Length: 431
Image 1 (cartoon, helix red, strand yellow):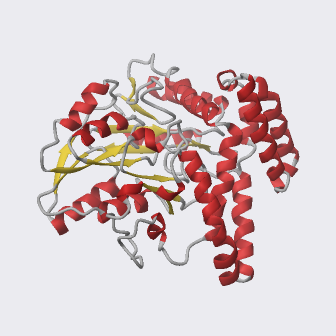
Image 2: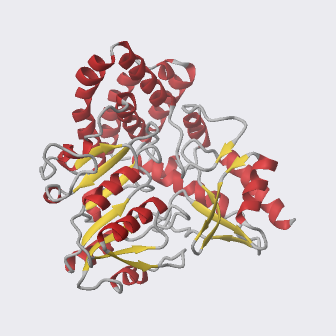
Image 3: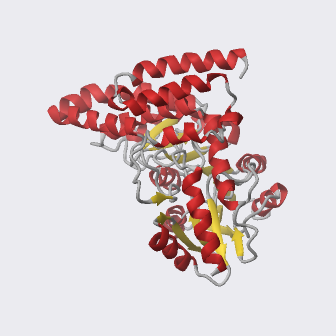
Protein backbone atom coordinates (compact mmCIF):
# COMPACT_ATOMS: atom_id res chain seq x y z
CA UNK A 1 0.00 0.00 0.00
CA UNK A 2 1.54 3.30 -1.08
CA UNK A 3 1.47 6.44 1.06
CA UNK A 4 -1.57 7.95 -0.68
CA UNK A 5 -3.58 4.72 -0.37
CA UNK A 6 -2.58 4.42 3.27
CA UNK A 7 -3.75 7.98 3.98
CA UNK A 8 -7.07 7.30 2.24
CA UNK A 9 -7.48 4.08 4.18
CA UNK A 10 -6.78 5.76 7.49
CA UNK A 11 -9.09 8.68 6.70
CA UNK A 12 -11.94 6.36 5.75
CA UNK A 13 -11.25 3.99 8.64
CA UNK A 14 -11.18 6.80 11.21
CA UNK A 15 -14.47 8.20 9.96
CA UNK A 16 -16.18 4.82 9.91
CA UNK A 17 -14.77 3.81 13.27
CA UNK A 18 -16.37 6.93 14.74
CA UNK A 19 -19.74 5.86 13.38
CA UNK A 20 -19.11 2.26 14.37
CA UNK A 21 -18.50 3.17 17.99
CA UNK A 22 -22.17 4.10 18.32
CA UNK A 23 -23.47 0.69 17.16
CA UNK A 24 -23.99 -2.30 19.46
CA UNK A 25 -21.97 -4.67 17.28
CA UNK A 26 -18.82 -2.55 17.22
CA UNK A 27 -19.15 -2.03 20.96
CA UNK A 28 -19.00 -5.81 21.43
CA UNK A 29 -15.84 -7.88 21.78
CA UNK A 30 -16.31 -9.26 18.25
CA UNK A 31 -16.74 -5.79 16.81
CA UNK A 32 -13.70 -4.39 18.59
CA UNK A 33 -11.65 -7.34 17.38
CA UNK A 34 -12.74 -6.67 13.80
CA UNK A 35 -11.77 -3.00 14.05
CA UNK A 36 -8.33 -4.03 15.31
CA UNK A 37 -8.02 -6.33 12.28
CA UNK A 38 -8.64 -3.40 9.97
CA UNK A 39 -5.89 -1.47 11.74
CA UNK A 40 -3.58 -4.45 11.32
CA UNK A 41 -4.30 -4.55 7.58
CA UNK A 42 -3.61 -0.89 6.88
CA UNK A 43 -0.10 -1.59 5.55
CA UNK A 44 -1.06 -4.68 3.55
CA UNK A 45 -2.17 -4.76 -0.06
CA UNK A 46 -5.60 -6.24 -0.86
CA UNK A 47 -3.84 -9.14 -2.61
CA UNK A 48 -2.06 -10.08 0.61
CA UNK A 49 -5.29 -10.24 2.62
CA UNK A 50 -7.24 -12.47 0.24
CA UNK A 51 -6.02 -15.64 1.99
CA UNK A 52 -5.89 -14.21 5.53
CA UNK A 53 -8.46 -16.60 7.01
CA UNK A 54 -8.20 -15.02 10.47
CA UNK A 55 -9.41 -11.72 9.05
CA UNK A 56 -12.23 -13.27 7.02
CA UNK A 57 -13.32 -15.35 9.99
CA UNK A 58 -13.74 -12.08 11.89
CA UNK A 59 -15.77 -10.72 8.97
CA UNK A 60 -18.01 -13.77 9.40
CA UNK A 61 -18.56 -12.79 13.03
CA UNK A 62 -19.99 -9.49 11.77
CA UNK A 63 -22.93 -11.48 10.37
CA UNK A 64 -25.60 -13.58 12.09
CA UNK A 65 -25.42 -16.49 9.65
CA UNK A 66 -26.52 -19.92 10.83
CA UNK A 67 -23.74 -22.08 12.32
CA UNK A 68 -25.66 -25.17 11.20
CA UNK A 69 -26.22 -24.39 7.52
CA UNK A 70 -23.54 -23.45 5.00
CA UNK A 71 -25.28 -20.84 2.87
CA UNK A 72 -24.00 -20.97 -0.70
CA UNK A 73 -26.99 -19.28 -2.29
CA UNK A 74 -25.93 -15.68 -1.80
CA UNK A 75 -26.72 -15.14 -5.46
CA UNK A 76 -30.40 -15.08 -4.56
CA UNK A 77 -30.15 -12.65 -1.67
CA UNK A 78 -27.36 -12.00 0.80
CA UNK A 79 -27.67 -11.62 4.57
CA UNK A 80 -27.02 -8.25 6.12
CA UNK A 81 -24.14 -7.55 8.53
CA UNK A 82 -25.21 -7.00 12.13
CA UNK A 83 -24.64 -3.25 11.83
CA UNK A 84 -27.14 -3.05 8.96
CA UNK A 85 -29.68 -5.13 10.87
CA UNK A 86 -29.22 -2.88 13.90
CA UNK A 87 -29.73 0.23 11.79
CA UNK A 88 -32.96 -1.08 10.25
CA UNK A 89 -34.29 -2.04 13.66
CA UNK A 90 -33.36 1.37 15.08
CA UNK A 91 -34.97 3.29 12.21
CA UNK A 92 -38.04 1.07 12.33
CA UNK A 93 -38.54 1.69 16.07
CA UNK A 94 -38.15 5.41 15.46
CA UNK A 95 -40.72 5.31 12.65
CA UNK A 96 -43.24 3.61 14.90
CA UNK A 97 -43.03 6.33 17.54
CA UNK A 98 -44.89 8.80 15.32
CA UNK A 99 -44.95 7.40 11.79
CA UNK A 100 -45.97 10.38 9.69
CA UNK A 101 -43.61 12.68 11.59
CA UNK A 102 -40.45 10.58 11.76
CA UNK A 103 -40.95 8.95 8.34
CA UNK A 104 -41.85 11.99 6.28
CA UNK A 105 -40.15 14.80 8.21
CA UNK A 106 -37.04 13.10 9.60
CA UNK A 107 -35.97 9.94 7.78
CA UNK A 108 -37.16 11.22 4.40
CA UNK A 109 -34.57 13.98 4.75
CA UNK A 110 -31.90 11.32 4.62
CA UNK A 111 -32.65 10.32 1.04
CA UNK A 112 -30.52 13.01 -0.56
CA UNK A 113 -27.34 12.23 1.44
CA UNK A 114 -28.00 8.55 0.65
CA UNK A 115 -28.36 9.38 -3.03
CA UNK A 116 -25.00 11.15 -2.95
CA UNK A 117 -23.32 8.19 -1.24
CA UNK A 118 -24.76 5.74 -3.75
CA UNK A 119 -23.67 8.00 -6.61
CA UNK A 120 -20.14 8.11 -5.22
CA UNK A 121 -20.11 4.31 -5.12
CA UNK A 122 -21.55 4.09 -8.65
CA UNK A 123 -19.28 6.81 -10.02
CA UNK A 124 -22.08 8.90 -11.49
CA UNK A 125 -24.11 12.02 -10.71
CA UNK A 126 -26.68 11.86 -7.89
CA UNK A 127 -29.09 13.39 -10.41
CA UNK A 128 -28.98 10.10 -12.34
CA UNK A 129 -29.88 7.73 -9.49
CA UNK A 130 -33.26 6.76 -8.03
CA UNK A 131 -33.69 4.49 -4.99
CA UNK A 132 -35.94 1.53 -5.76
CA UNK A 133 -36.76 -1.79 -4.12
CA UNK A 134 -34.91 -4.25 -6.36
CA UNK A 135 -33.60 -4.92 -9.85
CA UNK A 136 -37.01 -5.97 -11.15
CA UNK A 137 -38.63 -2.67 -10.17
CA UNK A 138 -35.76 -0.64 -11.59
CA UNK A 139 -35.53 -2.55 -14.86
CA UNK A 140 -39.30 -2.77 -15.38
CA UNK A 141 -39.47 0.99 -14.88
CA UNK A 142 -37.17 1.20 -17.89
CA UNK A 143 -38.82 -1.53 -19.95
CA UNK A 144 -42.33 -0.15 -19.52
CA UNK A 145 -41.20 3.48 -19.64
CA UNK A 146 -39.37 3.43 -22.98
CA UNK A 147 -41.22 5.05 -25.88
CA UNK A 148 -41.40 2.14 -28.28
CA UNK A 149 -43.84 1.62 -31.14
CA UNK A 150 -45.19 -1.41 -32.97
CA UNK A 151 -42.45 -2.90 -35.12
CA UNK A 152 -39.57 -1.52 -33.03
CA UNK A 153 -37.06 -4.26 -32.28
CA UNK A 154 -35.47 -5.20 -28.96
CA UNK A 155 -32.46 -7.54 -28.82
CA UNK A 156 -32.16 -9.75 -25.73
CA UNK A 157 -30.93 -13.23 -24.82
CA UNK A 158 -32.64 -16.40 -23.70
CA UNK A 159 -30.27 -16.42 -20.72
CA UNK A 160 -31.66 -13.16 -19.29
CA UNK A 161 -33.57 -13.07 -15.98
CA UNK A 162 -37.20 -14.32 -16.20
CA UNK A 163 -38.78 -11.15 -14.75
CA UNK A 164 -37.15 -9.10 -17.47
CA UNK A 165 -38.04 -11.58 -20.19
CA UNK A 166 -41.67 -11.54 -19.06
CA UNK A 167 -41.73 -7.74 -18.97
CA UNK A 168 -40.50 -7.57 -22.56
CA UNK A 169 -43.04 -10.22 -23.59
CA UNK A 170 -45.75 -8.05 -22.10
CA UNK A 171 -44.59 -5.10 -24.19
CA UNK A 172 -44.61 -7.40 -27.19
CA UNK A 173 -48.22 -8.38 -26.49
CA UNK A 174 -49.44 -4.88 -25.59
CA UNK A 175 -47.50 -2.68 -27.99
CA UNK A 176 -46.38 -4.91 -30.82
CA UNK A 177 -42.65 -4.50 -30.28
CA UNK A 178 -40.55 -7.23 -31.88
CA UNK A 179 -38.27 -9.32 -29.65
CA UNK A 180 -35.09 -10.57 -31.35
CA UNK A 181 -33.78 -13.51 -29.34
CA UNK A 182 -30.17 -14.64 -29.23
CA UNK A 183 -28.72 -17.53 -27.25
CA UNK A 184 -25.24 -18.39 -25.98
CA UNK A 185 -23.56 -21.63 -24.95
CA UNK A 186 -21.85 -20.51 -21.76
CA UNK A 187 -19.20 -20.49 -20.40
CA UNK A 188 -17.40 -18.28 -22.90
CA UNK A 189 -14.22 -16.22 -22.75
CA UNK A 190 -14.25 -14.89 -26.31
CA UNK A 191 -15.19 -11.23 -26.12
CA UNK A 192 -15.41 -10.77 -29.87
CA UNK A 193 -17.75 -13.75 -30.23
CA UNK A 194 -20.08 -12.49 -27.52
CA UNK A 195 -20.22 -8.98 -28.98
CA UNK A 196 -20.80 -10.44 -32.46
CA UNK A 197 -23.70 -12.48 -31.10
CA UNK A 198 -25.42 -9.21 -30.27
CA UNK A 199 -24.39 -7.16 -33.29
CA UNK A 200 -25.49 -9.89 -35.72
CA UNK A 201 -29.01 -9.43 -34.34
CA UNK A 202 -29.02 -5.65 -34.82
CA UNK A 203 -31.03 -4.24 -37.72
CA UNK A 204 -32.11 -0.72 -38.72
CA UNK A 205 -35.30 -1.38 -36.70
CA UNK A 206 -33.44 -2.18 -33.46
CA UNK A 207 -34.17 0.46 -30.81
CA UNK A 208 -32.99 -1.20 -27.59
CA UNK A 209 -30.52 -3.89 -26.55
CA UNK A 210 -30.95 -5.59 -23.16
CA UNK A 211 -27.62 -6.70 -21.65
CA UNK A 212 -27.34 -8.83 -18.53
CA UNK A 213 -23.98 -7.82 -17.05
CA UNK A 214 -23.58 -11.11 -15.18
CA UNK A 215 -25.76 -14.09 -16.08
CA UNK A 216 -27.45 -15.03 -12.82
CA UNK A 217 -27.67 -18.73 -13.75
CA UNK A 218 -23.94 -19.39 -13.90
CA UNK A 219 -22.01 -16.16 -13.14
CA UNK A 220 -20.79 -15.50 -16.70
CA UNK A 221 -19.78 -11.84 -17.15
CA UNK A 222 -20.70 -10.21 -20.45
CA UNK A 223 -18.67 -7.37 -22.06
CA UNK A 224 -21.39 -4.78 -21.48
CA UNK A 225 -19.22 -1.82 -22.44
CA UNK A 226 -18.19 -3.22 -25.81
CA UNK A 227 -21.79 -4.23 -26.61
CA UNK A 228 -22.93 -0.72 -25.67
CA UNK A 229 -20.31 0.87 -27.89
CA UNK A 230 -21.45 -1.16 -30.89
CA UNK A 231 -25.09 -0.41 -30.14
CA UNK A 232 -24.51 3.33 -29.91
CA UNK A 233 -22.76 3.34 -33.27
CA UNK A 234 -26.12 2.25 -34.66
CA UNK A 235 -28.26 4.63 -32.60
CA UNK A 236 -29.49 1.82 -30.32
CA UNK A 237 -30.21 2.50 -26.63
CA UNK A 238 -28.62 0.23 -24.03
CA UNK A 239 -30.23 -1.21 -20.90
CA UNK A 240 -27.94 -3.09 -18.48
CA UNK A 241 -29.18 -5.53 -15.84
CA UNK A 242 -26.54 -5.15 -13.12
CA UNK A 243 -28.30 -7.24 -10.46
CA UNK A 244 -25.25 -9.41 -9.81
CA UNK A 245 -22.35 -7.05 -10.44
CA UNK A 246 -22.93 -3.92 -8.36
CA UNK A 247 -20.58 -4.07 -5.31
CA UNK A 248 -19.46 -7.52 -6.55
CA UNK A 249 -16.56 -6.24 -8.60
CA UNK A 250 -15.25 -2.77 -9.35
CA UNK A 251 -16.59 -0.58 -12.15
CA UNK A 252 -18.48 2.67 -12.51
CA UNK A 253 -21.75 3.09 -14.36
CA UNK A 254 -20.32 5.61 -16.86
CA UNK A 255 -17.63 3.04 -17.73
CA UNK A 256 -20.36 0.71 -19.00
CA UNK A 257 -21.51 3.43 -21.42
CA UNK A 258 -25.13 2.35 -20.93
CA UNK A 259 -28.22 4.56 -21.03
CA UNK A 260 -30.20 2.71 -18.36
CA UNK A 261 -29.24 0.38 -15.51
CA UNK A 262 -30.89 -1.40 -12.60
CA UNK A 263 -29.56 -3.42 -9.68
CA UNK A 264 -30.49 -4.92 -6.33
CA UNK A 265 -28.61 -3.69 -3.29
CA UNK A 266 -29.61 -6.67 -1.12
CA UNK A 267 -27.31 -8.95 -3.09
CA UNK A 268 -23.62 -7.99 -3.13
CA UNK A 269 -23.85 -4.75 -1.15
CA UNK A 270 -25.56 -6.74 1.64
CA UNK A 271 -28.07 -3.92 2.10
CA UNK A 272 -31.53 -4.44 3.66
CA UNK A 273 -33.89 -6.81 1.88
CA UNK A 274 -35.97 -4.95 -0.67
CA UNK A 275 -33.53 -2.24 -1.70
CA UNK A 276 -32.41 -1.39 -5.20
CA UNK A 277 -31.09 1.29 -7.51
CA UNK A 278 -32.15 2.74 -10.86
CA UNK A 279 -29.74 4.65 -13.10
CA UNK A 280 -30.89 6.76 -16.02
CA UNK A 281 -28.41 8.82 -17.98
CA UNK A 282 -29.26 12.47 -17.44
CA UNK A 283 -30.31 13.26 -21.00
CA UNK A 284 -32.58 10.18 -21.08
CA UNK A 285 -34.66 10.99 -17.97
CA UNK A 286 -37.15 13.34 -19.64
CA UNK A 287 -38.35 10.81 -22.22
CA UNK A 288 -38.58 7.82 -19.88
CA UNK A 289 -42.01 7.44 -18.28
CA UNK A 290 -42.08 6.47 -14.57
CA UNK A 291 -43.66 3.16 -13.60
CA UNK A 292 -45.63 4.87 -10.82
CA UNK A 293 -47.32 8.06 -11.99
CA UNK A 294 -45.56 11.34 -11.22
CA UNK A 295 -46.91 14.88 -11.28
CA UNK A 296 -44.94 15.54 -14.43
CA UNK A 297 -44.09 12.26 -16.18
CA UNK A 298 -41.86 14.15 -18.64
CA UNK A 299 -39.80 15.87 -15.98
CA UNK A 300 -36.03 15.58 -16.27
CA UNK A 301 -35.78 15.09 -12.48
CA UNK A 302 -34.63 11.59 -11.47
CA UNK A 303 -36.91 11.75 -8.42
CA UNK A 304 -39.98 11.18 -10.58
CA UNK A 305 -39.04 7.48 -10.42
CA UNK A 306 -39.47 7.40 -6.62
CA UNK A 307 -43.24 8.06 -6.45
CA UNK A 308 -43.92 4.80 -4.68
CA UNK A 309 -45.95 6.30 -1.83
CA UNK A 310 -45.49 4.94 1.68
CA UNK A 311 -42.42 2.74 1.83
CA UNK A 312 -40.04 1.40 4.48
CA UNK A 313 -37.80 4.31 5.39
CA UNK A 314 -35.95 1.98 7.76
CA UNK A 315 -34.88 -0.22 4.85
CA UNK A 316 -33.95 2.79 2.76
CA UNK A 317 -31.77 4.40 5.41
CA UNK A 318 -30.14 1.07 6.24
CA UNK A 319 -28.54 1.17 2.79
CA UNK A 320 -26.16 3.88 4.01
CA UNK A 321 -24.80 1.61 6.72
CA UNK A 322 -24.29 -1.17 4.17
CA UNK A 323 -22.25 1.25 2.05
CA UNK A 324 -20.08 2.04 5.07
CA UNK A 325 -19.51 -1.66 5.73
CA UNK A 326 -18.62 -2.23 2.08
CA UNK A 327 -16.03 0.57 2.27
CA UNK A 328 -14.59 -0.85 5.49
CA UNK A 329 -13.82 -4.13 3.75
CA UNK A 330 -12.63 -2.31 0.64
CA UNK A 331 -13.99 -2.83 -2.87
CA UNK A 332 -10.78 -4.29 -4.28
CA UNK A 333 -10.22 -6.62 -1.33
CA UNK A 334 -13.83 -7.81 -1.57
CA UNK A 335 -13.65 -8.41 -5.33
CA UNK A 336 -10.46 -10.44 -5.02
CA UNK A 337 -11.81 -12.50 -2.14
CA UNK A 338 -15.09 -13.33 -3.89
CA UNK A 339 -13.32 -14.58 -7.00
CA UNK A 340 -10.81 -16.49 -4.87
CA UNK A 341 -13.62 -18.31 -3.03
CA UNK A 342 -15.26 -19.52 -6.26
CA UNK A 343 -11.96 -20.76 -7.63
CA UNK A 344 -10.99 -22.29 -4.27
CA UNK A 345 -13.69 -24.96 -4.41
CA UNK A 346 -13.87 -25.25 -8.20
CA UNK A 347 -10.17 -25.98 -8.72
CA UNK A 348 -10.30 -28.73 -6.11
CA UNK A 349 -12.98 -30.77 -7.85
CA UNK A 350 -12.21 -30.29 -11.55
CA UNK A 351 -9.76 -33.19 -11.55
CA UNK A 352 -12.74 -35.55 -11.28
CA UNK A 353 -13.61 -36.79 -14.79
CA UNK A 354 -17.36 -36.54 -14.27
CA UNK A 355 -17.40 -33.05 -12.67
CA UNK A 356 -17.81 -29.89 -14.72
CA UNK A 357 -17.77 -26.18 -13.95
CA UNK A 358 -20.13 -24.27 -16.24
CA UNK A 359 -18.55 -20.95 -15.25
CA UNK A 360 -15.26 -19.39 -16.40
CA UNK A 361 -12.40 -19.47 -13.88
CA UNK A 362 -10.82 -16.25 -15.16
CA UNK A 363 -11.34 -13.08 -13.13
CA UNK A 364 -12.17 -11.23 -16.36
CA UNK A 365 -15.22 -13.40 -16.89
CA UNK A 366 -16.44 -14.42 -13.44
CA UNK A 367 -16.75 -13.56 -9.79
CA UNK A 368 -18.19 -15.52 -6.87
CA UNK A 369 -20.91 -17.46 -8.69
CA UNK A 370 -20.08 -20.96 -9.92
CA UNK A 371 -22.28 -23.58 -11.57
CA UNK A 372 -21.49 -27.23 -10.86
CA UNK A 373 -22.48 -30.18 -13.04
CA UNK A 374 -21.97 -33.89 -12.39
CA UNK A 375 -22.39 -36.41 -15.21
CA UNK A 376 -25.32 -38.77 -14.72
CA UNK A 377 -26.85 -36.65 -11.95
CA UNK A 378 -29.70 -34.19 -12.27
CA UNK A 379 -29.12 -30.77 -10.65
CA UNK A 380 -32.01 -31.40 -8.27
CA UNK A 381 -30.42 -34.66 -7.11
CA UNK A 382 -27.07 -33.01 -6.44
CA UNK A 383 -28.61 -30.04 -4.64
CA UNK A 384 -30.81 -32.26 -2.50
CA UNK A 385 -27.84 -34.44 -1.52
CA UNK A 386 -25.68 -31.44 -0.59
CA UNK A 387 -28.33 -30.22 1.81
CA UNK A 388 -29.60 -33.50 3.24
CA UNK A 389 -26.14 -34.98 3.83
CA UNK A 390 -24.06 -31.86 4.50
CA UNK A 391 -26.49 -28.99 5.18
CA UNK A 392 -25.08 -27.01 2.25
CA UNK A 393 -27.75 -24.66 0.92
CA UNK A 394 -27.53 -24.05 -2.84
CA UNK A 395 -29.95 -23.59 -5.72
CA UNK A 396 -30.51 -25.75 -8.77
CA UNK A 397 -30.63 -24.29 -12.26
CA UNK A 398 -32.69 -25.70 -15.13
CA UNK A 399 -32.99 -22.88 -17.66
CA UNK A 400 -32.70 -23.02 -21.44
CA UNK A 401 -29.27 -24.59 -22.10
CA UNK A 402 -27.89 -24.01 -18.58
CA UNK A 403 -28.16 -26.83 -16.05
CA UNK A 404 -26.39 -27.39 -12.75
CA UNK A 405 -26.14 -26.49 -9.08
CA UNK A 406 -25.32 -22.84 -8.46
CA UNK A 407 -22.90 -22.32 -5.57
CA UNK A 408 -22.38 -18.76 -4.40
CA UNK A 409 -20.21 -17.82 -1.40
CA UNK A 410 -19.92 -14.32 0.04
CA UNK A 411 -17.44 -12.41 2.20
CA UNK A 412 -18.51 -14.24 5.35
CA UNK A 413 -17.83 -17.64 3.76
CA UNK A 414 -14.63 -19.25 4.99
CA UNK A 415 -12.40 -21.77 3.26
CA UNK A 416 -13.31 -24.16 6.07
CA UNK A 417 -16.91 -23.98 4.82
CA UNK A 418 -15.73 -24.65 1.29
CA UNK A 419 -13.61 -27.60 2.41
CA UNK A 420 -16.88 -29.23 3.49
CA UNK A 421 -18.30 -28.52 0.03
CA UNK A 422 -15.24 -29.93 -1.75
CA UNK A 423 -15.32 -33.17 0.24
CA UNK A 424 -19.07 -33.49 -0.35
CA UNK A 425 -18.67 -33.08 -4.12
CA UNK A 426 -15.75 -35.46 -4.36
CA UNK A 427 -17.48 -38.17 -2.31
CA UNK A 428 -20.74 -37.83 -4.20
CA UNK A 429 -19.14 -37.73 -7.64
CA UNK A 430 -17.04 -40.83 -6.93
CA UNK A 431 -20.06 -42.69 -5.56
